[in-house]
Image (cartoon, rainbow, N blue to C red):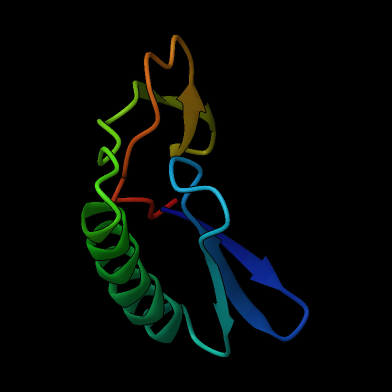
Length: 86
């Protein structure tokens, strides 16, 4: 799950589940909405007889002042990443 600060609050998306994105006023609210959306998305995939994506590879790279940023590489297949706090 990737979080982004917006002019009006926060948004989050899940790169491994195309089309899954949410927005809201608070980061915690967005986290809750996205978590619920992930469950619904996976349930829908299963109901349709489709495969649930496996986790992809992610690294965290320190770039400045001790902050960690994700750096995805060698992504073998789509997946779900539930931890996206930057």
